[in-house]
Length: 275
Image (tube, rainbow, N blue to C red; front, side, top):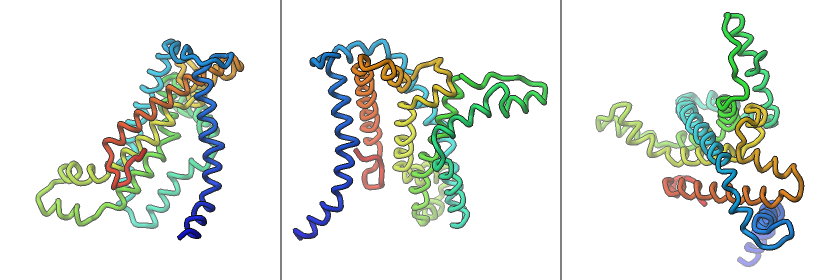
């Protein structure tokens, strides 16, 4: 048993070292900067002065929430449709869903400029119809569209994973008991797929609320998000590291609160979000 325990610790040691170097240490540094001033003296002035960034927090949460809802509306029927296909077709669709994730995030986001610009694909097509050009770039809709496109695989995959494991006998039993299609979905499918929905919401909302590149390229920085504010302050120089770290700390706390709330609605035994 001792040899087995030592072997497990030895195998886990690279992950522990990686976690300490790239997770624990950066968090400690962030907290230190957030709770000190430029002279290294303990202070909560940075956090107390974050009221000027409340608009950035509000817009970030709003955009992330809208993008998450749209992603869920699109991903759920897609995952359901995938489970109805034969195995080979499911694998092919899974490959198509995951394929964009293999490409660079910056390239995927930047490609939307050639689609949404005034001289892009959409407006060029509309111009041939005598319509437009329509302002698509540098709008809130473009930012939300970029979030949905970049993060929708993270919603499809957990929902599909849970939905593909549904016990078909339960669906047959609900039909035998007189459930129509809507009642079967409401009473059987939706409750059983809730863990996948919660996981998907988490995996989409968290990166959406903290993103900055999407808003810069597709939104034109008209509405500064939290991620934009953090990057902007860090680019100003070391004297702004404390304020930027305090924003990061508050954002991290908000995300943890959201995860905790969503965890309350998930079923731990069914693969929901576990903190």
